[in-house]
Amino acid sequence: MSQTTNIMGISFPNVTMDQTVAILSHVVEQRRTELFHVITGNPEIVMSCQKNRTLRAVVDQAGLVTADGAGIVMVSRVRGGQLTERVTGCDLLFRLLEEGNRKRWSFYMLGAEEHVSERALEVIEQNYPNVVVSGRHHGYFSTDEEQQIVEEIRDANPDFLIVALGAPNAEQWIDKYRHQLNARVAIGVGGSLDIVAGKTKRAPALWQKLNLEWLYRLLSQPSRWRRQLILPRFAVRALLFREQK
Image 1 (spheres, helix red, strand yellow):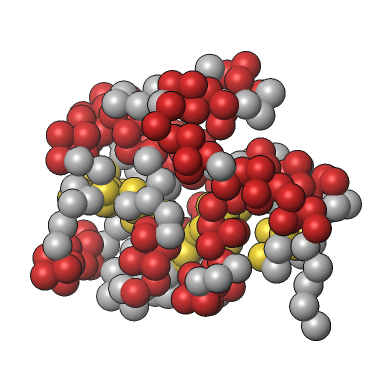
Image 2 (cartoon, one colour; image 1 turned 60 degrees about the vertical axis):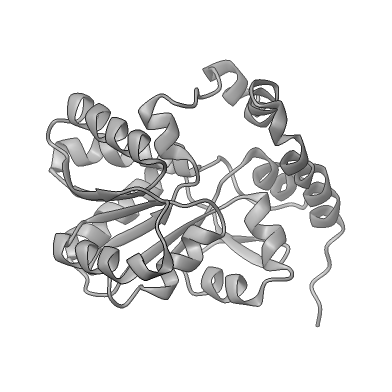
């Protein structure tokens, strides 16, 4: 991870999916007491960091920031960077479940609606029988319930804390409780539990290969159009970005 690519002030290590999984496997094997926070940096997070100082501080101190989105990789290439492939939260979660099935890793799943959370657990138990789901909780909880959830995660002592609360809520929630969670690795994965549960369909492989997954999601969920407007805004700002001295 010696080489990095700078996108609007955010440093992205030039790591592939295989390298990312290897890094996280090493973290788990070391049994570190300090939480290793992985941020899957998509255009939305990068743009938010330009005005949200709290989020920017969280990103700057993360253990690893991955390139979540074709836009990040494409801007890197245009600006002469060396990012070679996307490492999205959803893809990373599935890869970790595959590796966890071999190594009997434990996971705590936080987020999504209750019935989606339940279904995601059923799918994981069916497809990854050696994975240990040491706990789960839906994502619609009140502030008053947070400490109880934190204590449940702490007692579960998971290898991976998977947080599907949406960006940047997941990243800031993880950071807020980082010293109490007693997990080896924590990752915000957006709406990935919806995909695991089958509530939301993933773009076909060809669309992913052509870096058109964003378009597939827009066509599948037209209500996302306002959110998708951030993509062209990000591209323009990132390409014209100059670091302030």
